[in-house]
Length: 279
Image (cartoon, rainbow, N blue to C red; front, side, top):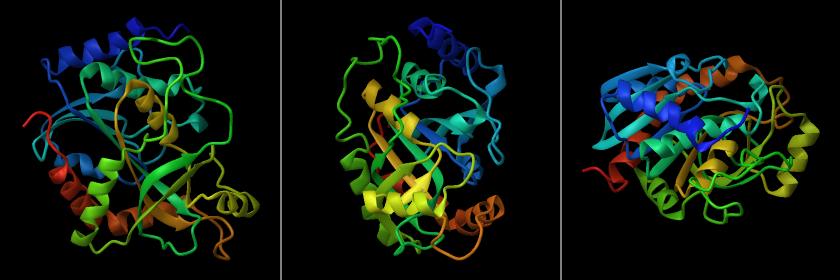
């Protein structure tokens, strides 16, 4: 498959046509267990992923698989309720599609949320981590292959990929929530199996604070496109080997539901404080 500028433009053109020319200024990706936040979108225009030409289809549990356009706290948003992962069988270059399409729609900022396992033993299930950096040791990249200059340069800096100004806003909002807020490093694992205790010990030694199977491909694609990113991880469980118990998807869902109300309020306060491009 040749992933060209026109390939992604076809997706964006369809979304623009269906939405009546709606132009978002902010992209939001809702991860595992966090999809219910999309009900906060005002005047929503809902488009199933399967209807969008050249787009992907979400197969992960708890991922609704729909694009919602509308307004939250004055921001015109393009909200993905459900994301895509390499463990679903998608190649890394395929995973560049969502952010590139949102770039063509006009977004200026991107917020990524996910469920993660806590590597840092000072964290607890239910805590929130503001991502300041990530570690991805595998060589694969969503930007491999021919460069598309309309999106960005062949070689690009990722030193401020998780934007320091957006991180500061998120950390400043810590006083408005009962949730414990941390800032840390997200360690990417491909999944779908949970990590082994030995892998978690290694990740901790290397500086990882939370483990997850998403977010990194989207953040890298956004950096290539010149889009500032805010990443938020909900600690839905302690990572493998931290506690003497097996990891389960049920625990992930249970914790997500337990903190959903508080997380929604915290997330909304962050949106309220982020300067609005379209206000």
